[in-house]
Amino acid sequence: MSLMLMDRLLVALGVGNLDDFVWFTPDDLVVLGVWKETQYAYYHDGVRVTYRKSEGEERPARTRAEWREVKRQLEKEKKRKRREKEKREKRWMERYGWRPS
Image 1 (cartoon, rainbow, N blue to C red):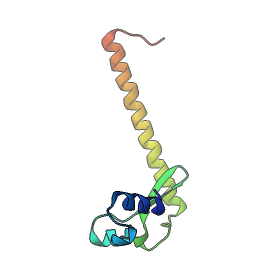
Image 2: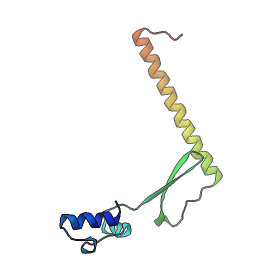
Image 3: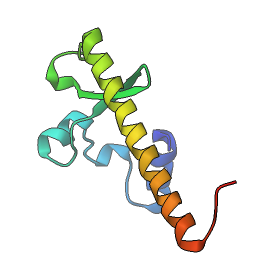
Image 4: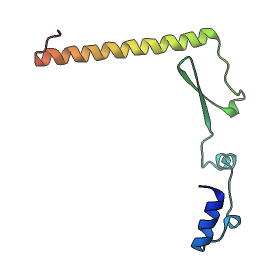
């Protein structure tokens, strides 16, 4: 909603206008404890990385070795989930008498 439309709405409802209200910036709301600090995210080689600006860096620096380790962990997790799914399917087939073709 634009500020102009909000002003028209407030005037039409008889509540007042935009200047009658106190407005807070996102930083003010963080200081007051109403909001949590904005978390920024970006993707690097398919890996989601989140950080907060207050941590000092615009984007946290990671070495190639660290990125490789993160990717290795993700691949390991995918393999584990795939094995679990195969085991569940196998148990289901045995339970209901299905045989793989």
